[in-house]
Image 1 (cartoon, rainbow, N blue to C red):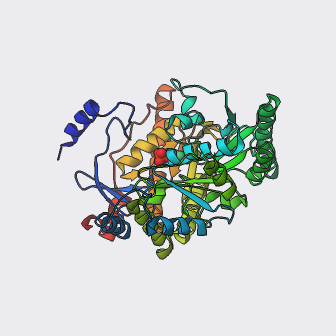
Image 2 (image 1 turned 90 degrees about the vertical axis):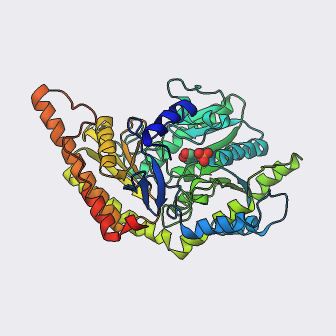
Length: 476
Ligand SMILES: Cc1ncc(COP(=O)(O)O)c(C=O)c1O
């Protein structure tokens, strides 16, 4: 095995610089993982609050076995009849509204969204797409074009003519805020923004192709769109000739607990649903589900859809095992119980720390908005950077996201426990206290903000270490 230093050197030489690492200054070398824990080259454990892909837990034995068994029997493309793809399609369709009745299997969330756009274009005959501000839908050219999160960066490709960006329906720090409007108006106010774009497209003599949005906006900062928003948007988009695409790549497969898919909490019916990441628990498998009408429009073109690996027997065996594990281990119920516990505990923490401006979430999808000032809601990216680094030193892995890089994101494997929450929250409590003390010290000494990311104390590892010792996790 390469030493960590050798790995860093080789990585710099051999891998494209744009493929960035977490913790670039001191990257982690992870060599194995189990459940919600990841282990570095020294066998030190980290609590994983990041990996929504390892949905049923890293290296879940049932998923690993399903993949190995099928791999030793057959793997080929889906031009041959095989039961696994049919079983998988049936499992997916059983969780969705009846009108969503046709599946296309692909290999990644990006492929799923690209195919969704293609279906929408063929079905509607239109090209103009409405997507959300700060949204990310994948790395293919077609998706970078509609992902404000990427095309709008310095060095990004810029906004294409067929792309229209609607304000992110963030009621805490978006265009329309809960501090300025009654909460039951916010859905309508944000939906009006989409109506404005639909009207603008039609005024130029064109029609709408699609509205695409995550049902909960993850890269935009763990945003939960207000009630009524999607219902009104879907009606407007359809009456403008477009179809509605729900991107469930991050938030699907029961992450919100109460439902299999996050759009179901709003009582809306998308025309196309895309899914990926958690579907294979780390194995590349993804899917597009649509209506018979849209699928018929696609087949009427006469062009075959062939995807070499999409829906192969191994991928589908794995996806089937993921579904079975979610059910066998009641992981949706776990997401409800542990998610509520996480949310409650973070809200309690907000009572102690002024740096916490907002806590929001549903199931095991939770975000904390860090602010420099609660009144103005000024985002505090410096605090987020400090928390990110110090939590890692305490062996808790979190991510920071949102347009101001000030949102702590929790999207852990669905096997996360209340004990894990206790460890995370007590660590965060301590780290936020450190940040406050450091800020106060600097304010007194220099009347300046603290240098980003300087810890005042040595890492303690207490809650995580004692939790691991208690659970004898190291010996896995
Ligand atoms: C919401 C959303 N859609 C699509 C994608 C693309 O998925 P993939 O990276 O599997 O291509 C991502 C990836 O992060 C995503 O977050």
